[in-house]
Amino acid sequence: MANAEKILSLYDTDVRVIVRGKAGAKVEFGNRALIGENRQGVILDHQLFQESAPADSQLLFGSLLRVWEGTGRHVGSRRATVVFDRGGFSPALFQKILEAGFDLLTYRKGRVRRIPARCFREHRTRVEGRTFTYRLADQQVRLLKGKLRLRQVVRQKDDGHQTPILTSRRDLSPAQVAYRMFNRWRQENCFKSRIGTRHRRCPFRRFPYAVLCSQTRAEIRVAGVMDLRRDPQHIERRRKTT
Image (cartoon, rainbow, N blue to C red; front, side):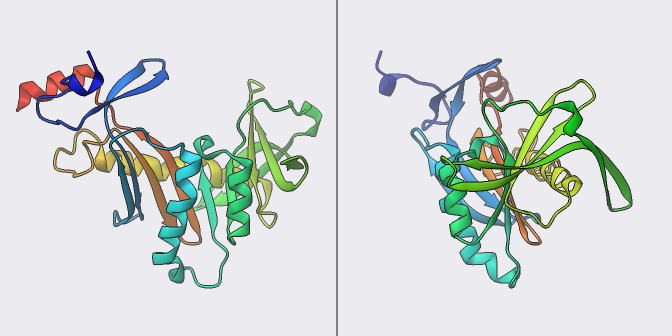
């Protein structure tokens, strides 16, 4: 049977099959939407994709420029930092962000050479009355065949796992870089709780994927692709309650 002839939902006629390939969520049903909002919940940018959507790295730059055009004046003369997840990892995108006058902060994706244990030092930073401690290695790396030079801060946990972070910010201490990257999830958790499946009246709950842009002071945090599932079990539960 052709996909156009399949009935995927009795109440959402525009639902599509989304192949994710992830454990526990190989196939889901719904649409993809890009939603940009600030911390107060004001929608700054949006875009709906009823068919397949471009990769996150392709969506990010266009949305960033649209959000900045409408809100950038509130930052003043400060240089804004774009904070995003591995979904936006693209050295070509990094170059475009820097050329547009922004700084960046993100995780490094792909195979990365392990840093020797002797290179790590204990670093601390104090934020909002709390002290955060990390074992970090701070170094310079080159991407795009040496054309793009960035700072790499690698965190090593007690079990030896290493998490590399890339940034163009050289004015921050290593601990501040680590805190700001790991703190990114506060925006995503807030967004998830606001438009999660528990909030039936939210106009965006019917879209199982959303890209969140949250502007905080001189930082624009992109929470990445949200996963608000529309799996077969969820459809069945929704049908029984309507």
